[in-house]
Image 1 (spheres, rainbow, N blue to C red):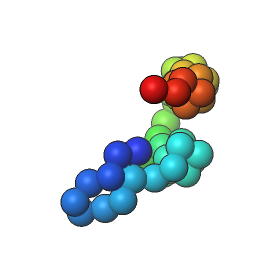
Image 2: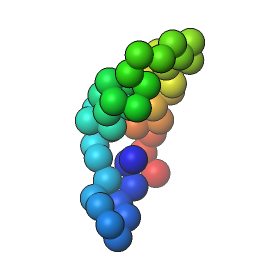
Image 3: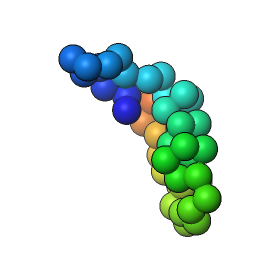
Length: 48
């Protein structure tokens, strides 16, 4: 969801997390969602 592809532009991190939580995982219990969101935010801070 974050990478640009020929058929669509990638989403920014916040938008991708919202789509994941409220569209892709809507109505589903996911015990790792908060850990994943924390991981993504930490990785966003790393500069290459």
